[in-house]
Image 1 (cartoon, rainbow, N blue to C red):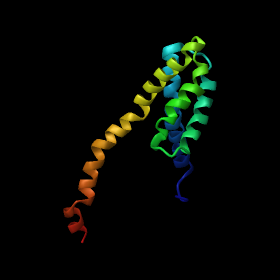
Image 2 (cartoon, one colour):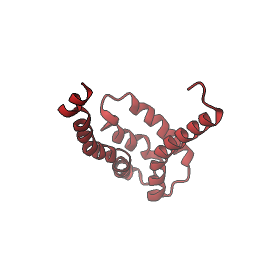
Image 3 (cartoon, helix red, strand yellow):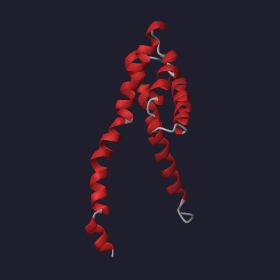
Image 4 (cartoon, rainbow, N blue to C red):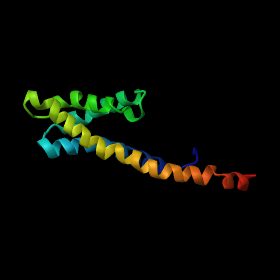
Length: 129
């Protein structure tokens, strides 16, 4: 890795930055689609803090906590009546998780058993020996 050229590192940095930014921008797009909220930078910054909090959660992907923190941490950003903030936040949180988290679980449930069968079947062990 230390022999890679500068262009490699620039491309690596840019692709990593774009992939993580696109992950955060999903919620920005959802809130913009539902509510037309203008302060996208504040929303993006709050999501960054939210994702850092989700890293230390003991459940995979911060399940449960992510929906709760999305509703309460980003709910005040949504321009709705105060009595509707929790409901609106919960709705957007569920749609957000349906787009960003649950497809990975479904795809993994399909691919992982096939991968296990391919790499850890009795035939695979006999080929290695």
